[in-house]
Image (tube, rainbow, N blue to C red; front, side):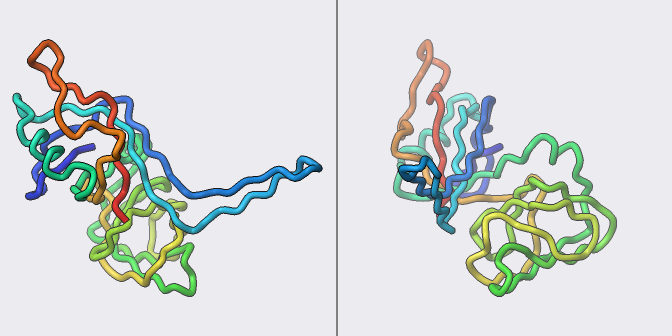
Length: 197
Protein backbone atom coordinates (compact mmCIF):
# COMPACT_ATOMS: atom_id res chain seq x y z
CA UNK A 1 0.00 0.00 0.00
CA UNK A 2 2.44 2.74 1.17
CA UNK A 3 6.01 3.13 2.37
CA UNK A 4 6.33 5.57 5.27
CA UNK A 5 9.19 7.83 6.35
CA UNK A 6 10.38 8.20 9.96
CA UNK A 7 7.44 10.54 10.70
CA UNK A 8 4.94 8.08 9.17
CA UNK A 9 4.37 10.32 6.12
CA UNK A 10 3.50 8.43 2.93
CA UNK A 11 6.44 8.68 0.50
CA UNK A 12 5.75 5.86 -2.00
CA UNK A 13 2.79 3.76 -3.09
CA UNK A 14 2.90 0.08 -4.03
CA UNK A 15 2.08 -0.53 -7.67
CA UNK A 16 0.84 -3.70 -9.31
CA UNK A 17 1.66 -6.47 -9.36
CA UNK A 18 2.08 -6.78 -5.58
CA UNK A 19 2.47 -10.16 -3.87
CA UNK A 20 2.05 -10.85 -0.14
CA UNK A 21 3.68 -14.15 0.85
CA UNK A 22 3.50 -16.03 4.14
CA UNK A 23 6.96 -17.46 4.83
CA UNK A 24 6.83 -20.38 7.28
CA UNK A 25 9.75 -22.83 7.40
CA UNK A 26 8.60 -26.31 6.32
CA UNK A 27 10.88 -29.34 6.22
CA UNK A 28 9.76 -32.03 3.77
CA UNK A 29 11.27 -35.42 2.98
CA UNK A 30 10.10 -38.35 0.84
CA UNK A 31 10.82 -41.80 2.26
CA UNK A 32 11.54 -44.89 0.12
CA UNK A 33 7.83 -45.73 -0.11
CA UNK A 34 7.35 -42.21 -1.53
CA UNK A 35 5.30 -41.22 1.49
CA UNK A 36 5.91 -37.56 2.22
CA UNK A 37 6.75 -36.41 5.76
CA UNK A 38 6.46 -32.69 6.48
CA UNK A 39 7.17 -30.68 9.60
CA UNK A 40 6.00 -27.08 9.86
CA UNK A 41 7.71 -24.67 12.24
CA UNK A 42 5.81 -22.07 14.29
CA UNK A 43 7.91 -19.14 13.04
CA UNK A 44 6.25 -16.99 10.36
CA UNK A 45 6.79 -13.66 8.63
CA UNK A 46 5.08 -11.73 5.84
CA UNK A 47 7.07 -10.92 2.71
CA UNK A 48 5.98 -8.43 0.05
CA UNK A 49 7.15 -8.23 -3.56
CA UNK A 50 6.17 -4.99 -5.29
CA UNK A 51 7.14 -2.12 -7.53
CA UNK A 52 6.91 1.45 -6.24
CA UNK A 53 5.44 4.75 -7.33
CA UNK A 54 7.06 7.71 -5.50
CA UNK A 55 4.59 10.28 -4.21
CA UNK A 56 6.89 13.23 -4.89
CA UNK A 57 8.37 14.35 -8.20
CA UNK A 58 12.02 13.71 -7.39
CA UNK A 59 11.58 10.69 -5.09
CA UNK A 60 14.05 12.36 -2.69
CA UNK A 61 12.45 11.01 0.49
CA UNK A 62 12.40 7.46 -0.87
CA UNK A 63 16.03 7.72 -1.94
CA UNK A 64 17.03 8.97 1.53
CA UNK A 65 15.05 6.18 3.21
CA UNK A 66 16.62 3.39 1.14
CA UNK A 67 20.17 4.72 1.51
CA UNK A 68 19.99 5.43 5.24
CA UNK A 69 17.99 2.37 6.29
CA UNK A 70 19.58 0.01 3.79
CA UNK A 71 18.95 -3.62 4.64
CA UNK A 72 19.81 -3.32 8.35
CA UNK A 73 17.28 -0.85 9.80
CA UNK A 74 13.51 -1.32 9.80
CA UNK A 75 11.02 1.20 8.45
CA UNK A 76 7.21 1.22 8.36
CA UNK A 77 4.70 0.41 5.66
CA UNK A 78 0.93 0.29 5.54
CA UNK A 79 0.10 -3.39 5.02
CA UNK A 80 -1.78 -4.00 1.75
CA UNK A 81 -5.23 -5.56 2.24
CA UNK A 82 -6.87 -8.04 -0.12
CA UNK A 83 -9.28 -6.41 -2.59
CA UNK A 84 -12.14 -8.59 -1.32
CA UNK A 85 -11.47 -7.28 2.18
CA UNK A 86 -11.58 -3.67 0.95
CA UNK A 87 -14.91 -4.30 -0.80
CA UNK A 88 -16.69 -6.13 2.03
CA UNK A 89 -15.54 -4.53 5.29
CA UNK A 90 -17.76 -2.21 7.29
CA UNK A 91 -16.18 -0.13 10.05
CA UNK A 92 -17.12 -0.79 13.70
CA UNK A 93 -17.14 2.03 16.28
CA UNK A 94 -14.32 0.18 18.06
CA UNK A 95 -12.67 -3.25 18.05
CA UNK A 96 -10.56 -4.64 20.90
CA UNK A 97 -8.76 -7.96 21.31
CA UNK A 98 -7.54 -10.13 24.17
CA UNK A 99 -5.74 -13.43 23.98
CA UNK A 100 -3.97 -15.77 26.37
CA UNK A 101 -1.21 -18.20 25.51
CA UNK A 102 -3.44 -21.13 26.48
CA UNK A 103 -5.19 -20.74 23.09
CA UNK A 104 -2.65 -19.29 20.62
CA UNK A 105 -4.75 -19.97 17.49
CA UNK A 106 -7.61 -17.62 18.40
CA UNK A 107 -8.32 -14.21 19.90
CA UNK A 108 -11.27 -12.82 21.82
CA UNK A 109 -12.77 -9.85 19.97
CA UNK A 110 -15.03 -7.24 21.56
CA UNK A 111 -16.82 -4.92 19.12
CA UNK A 112 -18.89 -1.79 19.67
CA UNK A 113 -21.38 -0.80 17.01
CA UNK A 114 -22.38 -2.51 13.79
CA UNK A 115 -19.76 -3.60 11.27
CA UNK A 116 -18.08 -6.45 9.46
CA UNK A 117 -14.44 -7.57 9.17
CA UNK A 118 -13.95 -10.28 6.50
CA UNK A 119 -11.66 -13.25 6.94
CA UNK A 120 -8.32 -12.63 5.24
CA UNK A 121 -8.05 -9.16 6.80
CA UNK A 122 -4.61 -8.22 8.12
CA UNK A 123 -4.82 -6.86 11.67
CA UNK A 124 -2.49 -5.45 14.27
CA UNK A 125 -3.13 -5.20 17.99
CA UNK A 126 -1.95 -2.06 19.81
CA UNK A 127 1.52 -2.34 21.41
CA UNK A 128 2.21 -5.59 19.50
CA UNK A 129 4.48 -5.42 16.44
CA UNK A 130 3.37 -8.62 14.66
CA UNK A 131 0.77 -8.47 11.87
CA UNK A 132 -1.83 -11.25 11.89
CA UNK A 133 -4.50 -12.47 9.47
CA UNK A 134 -8.07 -13.29 10.48
CA UNK A 135 -9.27 -16.80 9.64
CA UNK A 136 -12.93 -15.97 10.35
CA UNK A 137 -15.42 -13.24 9.51
CA UNK A 138 -16.13 -10.89 12.44
CA UNK A 139 -19.61 -9.43 12.86
CA UNK A 140 -20.18 -9.69 16.63
CA UNK A 141 -18.23 -10.03 19.86
CA UNK A 142 -16.73 -13.54 20.11
CA UNK A 143 -13.70 -15.79 19.66
CA UNK A 144 -12.12 -15.91 16.20
CA UNK A 145 -9.27 -17.75 14.49
CA UNK A 146 -6.01 -15.95 13.80
CA UNK A 147 -2.86 -16.75 11.79
CA UNK A 148 -0.07 -17.26 12.66
CA UNK A 149 -0.24 -18.52 16.23
CA UNK A 150 0.18 -15.76 18.79
CA UNK A 151 3.46 -16.03 20.72
CA UNK A 152 2.67 -13.59 23.57
CA UNK A 153 -0.42 -12.49 25.49
CA UNK A 154 -2.07 -9.48 23.88
CA UNK A 155 -4.65 -6.91 24.88
CA UNK A 156 -5.55 -3.75 23.01
CA UNK A 157 -7.31 -1.94 20.19
CA UNK A 158 -7.31 -3.66 16.79
CA UNK A 159 -6.18 -1.89 13.59
CA UNK A 160 -7.86 -3.48 10.56
CA UNK A 161 -8.58 -0.70 8.08
CA UNK A 162 -5.95 1.13 6.02
CA UNK A 163 -4.05 1.78 9.27
CA UNK A 164 -2.22 -1.53 9.77
CA UNK A 165 1.41 -0.45 10.09
CA UNK A 166 4.04 -3.18 9.72
CA UNK A 167 7.77 -2.66 10.35
CA UNK A 168 9.83 -4.16 7.50
CA UNK A 169 13.36 -4.56 6.25
CA UNK A 170 14.42 -3.99 2.67
CA UNK A 171 15.65 -7.40 1.53
CA UNK A 172 19.34 -7.68 0.66
CA UNK A 173 18.42 -8.54 -2.95
CA UNK A 174 16.78 -5.10 -3.42
CA UNK A 175 18.48 -1.92 -4.63
CA UNK A 176 19.40 0.42 -1.73
CA UNK A 177 19.96 3.38 -4.03
CA UNK A 178 18.00 4.68 -7.00
CA UNK A 179 17.72 3.76 -10.68
CA UNK A 180 16.48 6.16 -13.34
CA UNK A 181 14.75 5.55 -16.64
CA UNK A 182 15.47 8.19 -19.29
CA UNK A 183 17.30 10.20 -16.62
CA UNK A 184 13.99 11.31 -15.11
CA UNK A 185 11.79 8.53 -13.78
CA UNK A 186 12.81 6.48 -10.76
CA UNK A 187 12.59 2.72 -11.27
CA UNK A 188 13.84 0.33 -8.60
CA UNK A 189 12.27 -2.65 -10.34
CA UNK A 190 10.60 -5.15 -8.03
CA UNK A 191 11.66 -4.85 -4.40
CA UNK A 192 11.23 -7.33 -1.57
CA UNK A 193 10.17 -6.23 1.91
CA UNK A 194 10.35 -8.66 4.85
CA UNK A 195 8.48 -8.23 8.14
CA UNK A 196 10.74 -7.13 10.99
CA UNK A 197 10.21 -9.64 13.80
